[in-house]
Image 1 (tube, rainbow, N blue to C red):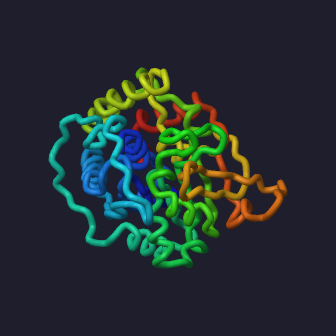
Image 2 (image 1 turned 30 degrees about the vertical axis):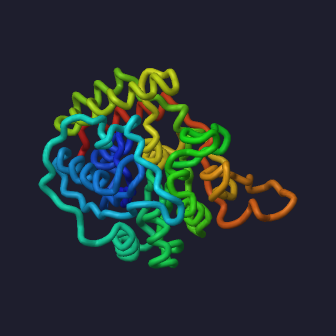
Length: 318
């Protein structure tokens, strides 16, 4: 049976690539898209989520969520990375559908309660919607099948500060609540995603196979690729958010360690993600609070890219 997921997102060029996977893969049942601020404003995130589902010819519920962080001032969206419209500043078609009246957090609560033990929450933006859902219904920790978070960095260093990854930095207080909640959680962060590069030849195959959606994926990729050439000196992009879905379907492509997660919520290291290995003792227990998580510490980069291309190029057998 397909795995039912809710995809929590701030689209975002790499989010768009991941949404395409969630829409295409025959073993994923996409229950809905929940939107958050992050790469773009909440209004743009919701517009893009609606648009991407429309371009794929699918009717997917979209619920709008967090417009800003729980505590800290909101950072401006990174227009130089994703474009001001989140999709490389390309011209986009009009959207004809609308978001649900229901909030993202309530949508998560209702869907999980309707199918206890079945639903996987895949979160690839700041984590305010999951934190709000926990606030609405603390029993979610016993009802979700798993939470998969694209975010954080244990040994790789940060991408928006020397130590912090963007999703965690944008709302560290929400991240702290989510990463330390007592539910089964896998963190797919920069330690793994920076091992994966979606190259131009692979992207060309995806564009050709994905029709109208492929055109948007290809044109937005060009903007994102230019950023990566300047920032990291690579020809392509790291498909960060897609990696969360790759882990869900092909965990064998990742090397995982187990440990306790913490998030620094203020000061110079704000947004840093820390992992205390499960079987190691420290001078006091403050680094070993909450639940033991699975943390992706490496990835088979070529294998991940092959899986992404295969998913988006091979017609689904439905």
